Image (cartoon, rainbow, N blue to C red; front, side, top):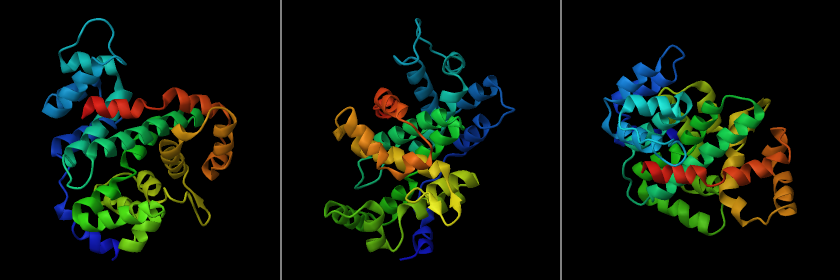
Length: 274
């Protein structure tokens, strides 16, 4: 089964609402101001509710409760608003998928995105871009579950038998979620750097090319899956030293404390927004 065969069913996928797409463009524009953003958010009921909920959460709340979108946007700031809009765009497009536990899916997605942002800050690169890449990294899975739910279940069976996700997907589909996600991101007109990160998340080095964002996503996905099973100290240090992406990104052992301090924040954020 080719990528094009799966993508030929892209019309089965729900579309990102127009107002949400416009809002994504607005928050990512350097020329936008907070008043414009607040006005556009007010037009989208679901995002408005999420903005208010997050602004009054323990992480952002400071004293009085805010009840207007204008006040909430000022309290949160542009960075978290970008994060929230990107997340809401995807969550709005996929409100329900049979056979897929969306609570677990979004928990993993937010966790990888949040950890990607942490590593981006450590590397002094664009944190919002890293977060967005993390939010988009598994959209190929959404395509597979939406178009071919029966084949998605077969992929799960191969994974339970010990295959990695890309191995299992290649066996069942002759492609994998990274390639599908990259092509889906193209149809949604995301930037080339994000498309490249999604497509190469299972292998950040392709010939002479190295995708820094792909390496970050891959490392953060492994952290999400395995970090909590590792004992403190030498076990985590040894585990990191065995991860190719850790060396390729030029990270050091300060990352252990960063990961420990930020582990679980993404899953908490997902729970607040769902």
